[in-house]
Amino acid sequence: MKVRRVVSLTTLVSFIFLALTGIMLFFSPHGRVAYWSGWRMFGLSKEQYVDLHTTLMVLFLVAGIWHTVLNWRAIVGYLKDRSKKVKLFTPGFSVALALSGLFIVGPLVGLFPFQQFLNASDMIKDYWEATRGSPPWGHAELSPLGRFCRRMEDFVRLEDQRHVTIDCDEAVAALREAGVEVKDESQQVLEIARANSTTPQALAEIILTVARPGPPAGDRRAGPGRSARFLVPYSGLGRMTLRQYAERYGVDLDLALAILRDRGVDLDPDNRLRAEAQRLGTDPAGIVLWINEGAGSTRR
Image (cartoon, rainbow, N blue to C red):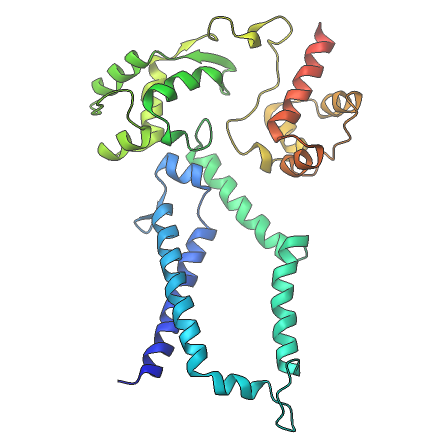
């Protein structure tokens, strides 16, 4: 059995599977959505696709280097001109370098069609988030159950625009009543979900059945002038533009822009909030907070 043949075929096979896992990751949701909702495609989770893609990348890298070494004489031949002298910038190498450079620079500066290709991936991820749901905060599934219940007090439930308070003992009792085995509140939500062959999202739905309306005692958000505050979505805010945010949550875009202008902030409503936030030295939620503060001052 010839080594060259094995190396060449290994390079080919690893490339094929590397491409397949890359395609699956292109069509997969954001990690927070995948882990929260238990997303799977063809029986594999996103975490498994990431693991496969990483290990296949190592195999392809090793096989590719070995393949290059075995074919080094042929590669050097590609770099020779008509006089048989080695010349780095031959027509073939120049085209290869330019093509590679285009695929590096294109996405970084948003050239067509690279930006449109990346936008398509974002649209797919938005679809998964809209249909499968998302956690109340990034990787909430990694929170211990006790912290999960306490932190839920800090968030607004978007469907009815009210705060909730969750008693952890009641949450544990509700989970056990639903047939979920729980040791104690120190267990991670993800650990509980995996031990019971379910998803963190399904556990959260059970936990929210014992939620009581109303903010925790002393919560300043319940103060005067804040009852009609604009909402901060659980996740995905940075990928929205201000215009999309306004349309989705019923915010008066002109009012929001006027509030920001009064604060000395010039914001492009059609640019993503993450990019605008980076330019302004804050985060996407900070922009919404500015709007809330301005709206609160106009009501008082």
